[in-house]
Length: 110
Image 1: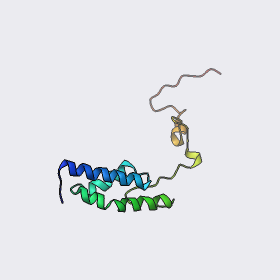
Image 2 (image 1 turned 180 degrees about the vertical axis):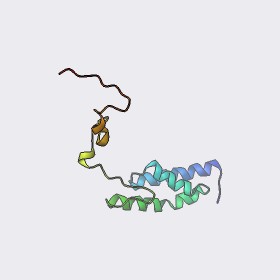
Image 3 (image 1 turned 135 degrees about the vertical axis):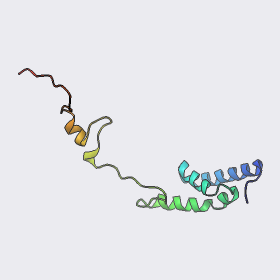
Image 4 (image 1 turned 60 degrees about the vertical axis):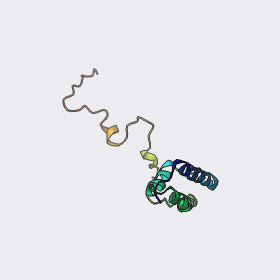
């Protein structure tokens, strides 16, 4: 194994890209990078083991409760925790109208 000349690596890369495209799966750049980095000294091995990545992602795509190894599936925030961008939530909202230590508060007319 090991690095081959540029023309060989280019051919392997082309076949790799064609197989990914033909799979119809949407892979993230992180998916592909993780796969390639584990096999970085052997481009041919990365091509030969591509089926493992495709099978993993295919299984994840059909199972809404599973996430591929090395990834996490974030749950959306509860409705009461969601806020428009820049809106204050939680303690920040409660403390928004309170003066901070050392802050001067102008008297209000009644």
